[in-house]
Image (cartoon, rainbow over all chains, first blue to last red; front, side, top):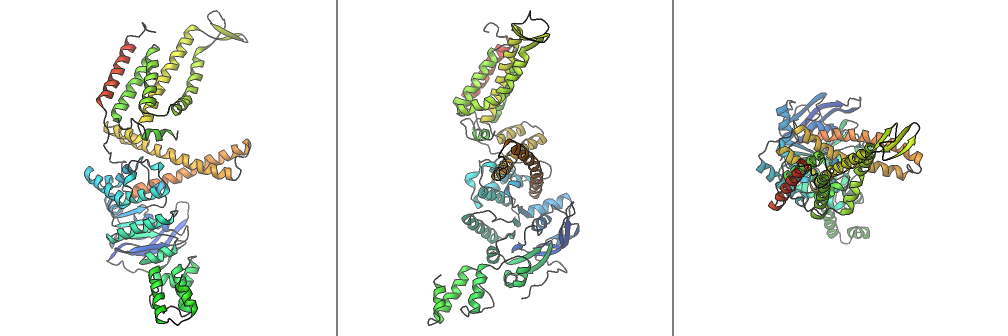
Length: 306
Length: 261
């Protein structure tokens, strides 16, 4: 139950990506990562939390081999990543990154071309490239944009094209750097539905976000970065129930947990070992309570009408 | 500038094969430049204007506005060719006295200037025809099929993309400056422009690093490769028109066309 500092003595066999004692400083001397340890289970949904500048994006660049650790090691499927041309090509085929700013990722003139870039680099045959591009466009619902020039797209559209560009490479692990930032609520829902589909299809997903509600509801594994140090790692409920940890790292409690602890402290919600993960679970717990104590306090009834 | 590529995507001649458009524009441009008489460049000017505005349906007002940009340079160039500084005014058609010299024009000079002007204008019309009817992706696709070195095609693609990144960034910075009265008077405006330029270059360097990372993340190693979507063809009437017009021009240019003009 207790959140412990993630110290990995040896990398587990079932982890698809892992880093061990990873440190990195930029040429200007800025130390961004300090001895980071992290392990991502195959097929998991991992969330990385941390303030701006905590080192999330730099960590991601290590997972795809763009940056080489200055100290420590990175692992793919339990084996240390090698940095020769062939191993890197293999790594980048398996691990795709969707960058936060889609403009830094889209460089070609039209949507179809941009999505075809990855599969072309994998040396797929033209017909296979076409199939993959079509499939990726369908998954991200941008088939209608195929001929549009990239600079005329809206932010949400660019974001989807950027994701399609990564999906077309059929990666096993998809890393998303703040995928819901700047999206309107409807597009956030679309994005989460897309991620759910990808997860169902067997992909491992890693995401950084500042949206605690989203992280809590979505993740099955959470890590917290603070000024380049991995200060915590574990199940979302362990992270988010740890008030001290949240306070130290400027994170806040998801509203579901806030409501849950308030209700629990007033005895209106049966204390269970597993707090609710979703709105549905929270409301379900409430209505059960209401039935069992129909004569109960008026405040309960008021709340259940929310 | 920013309106141009809109038209290149949405014009009636988009679907004409870029191979034919490039070849036609290039051959016509060269014929116009090699011409020693006025008729070929003038007919090129008319034909290209006609095709662009009435066939490809690029709005005439937009076309004229676009033409005015190089027209300014052309006029200045032509005037400087026509003007001659001389010690006597005997050969000069018109002249004004400037100290010990005469500044004026000769018959030959005027003819030269007019020829230069029409030739350059015809070249501009060829370039406008191509750039208003053919989006960059079609051009690079065709150059690739013509085995033009990858490095050139890559540069074209990236430069093109960066024009928009530069432009959008400049607009964003300008708006941010204007919102804090950065362009309230000419002096402030000039200083703000300096800030804008320096921060623009910093941003673009940052952006290009990010772009490079994103390329590498998707397996970029030696060259930018994309898949072309094949959807272009040229009706035979248009091909015939291209060839016919250029043959006619060739006849005029080689035969000097002196009988007509």
